[in-house]
Length: 307
Image (cartoon, rainbow, N blue to C red; front, side, top):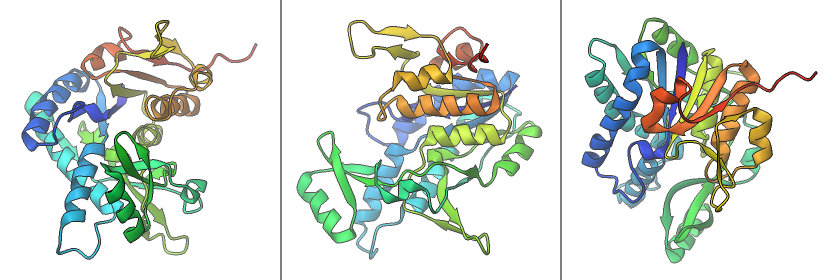
C-alpha cells in the first residue's frame, strides 16, 4: 500500500517548547519511531508542517542588519524544508537500517488568478506586540490581524494545483525509497504561461491540502493526517463531546470544523477521498500504525452511492 503521511506542527515542537535545535532533535526521534512500522510494510511519503521553523527564520531574517528587506516567504519555506528534512532523514535512517531515505525540496504550483490572492487570511511568521506589528505593517505593507497575544502577519493562502516534483517522488518510491517532501505545503510558485518559468509568491499553501494533492498525484492508497488528538470529536470543547470514528466527506463538511484547527485537515481528507475513492484518516502521531490498521483515529471513507 502507498501511504502519504502529513505530520502536524507538534511533531517537532510541542506547545510551549522553544525552537532549540536540541529539542527538535529529541522530538524527531518520536516521529521516526511512530512511522517506521508503516515503512516496514508500505511505500511511504512523509510531509510536515513548518510553522514554528518559518517563524524562527523569518525573525532572524528581519533582524539581520545586512539585509535591505527580510527574505521572501518562498525562500524561507525552502530553508525550512532543508532544516526539517535533514532531521527527518537522519532519524528515519536510524530506525530503518538499509532503507534509502531522502528529503526532496518540493515546489507547489498555485494559480496566479486564485481568488485567495485578493485577500490575506493565512498566518505567517511570529506574533508581534501591537506597536511592533503596526511599524512593520507600515514599513513593508504587510497585512496584520489579531492572533493570541498580539498581531500576526496574514498572507494569501492559495490552493495547491500540483506538486511540481511529483513524478520524481513517484520514481523514488517505486524504488523503495522513503521520501520526505512537500514540507510546509511546499514552496509556493506560479508558472509563466508562455515559458513555464516558476516564480515564488508571498503566500502559504496549507500543508494538509498540499499533502492531499500530492497523495492524489501519486495515486496513494491512504492519506494519514497526524496531529495531537486521537480522533475528531463532535461537540469538541463542550461537555457533550463525542469521538467520531467513521465519517464520509459529506459528514466532514457538515460538521463545519474550525478553520484554525481541524478544518483544513478535514477538508484535505474529504478532497482526497472524493477525488480518488481511497481512504484517509486523522489521528494521533503515536498511533500512526494503529490508525492505518483501523484500531484508532477517525477513518474517512467514500460516500455511499445514492440509491
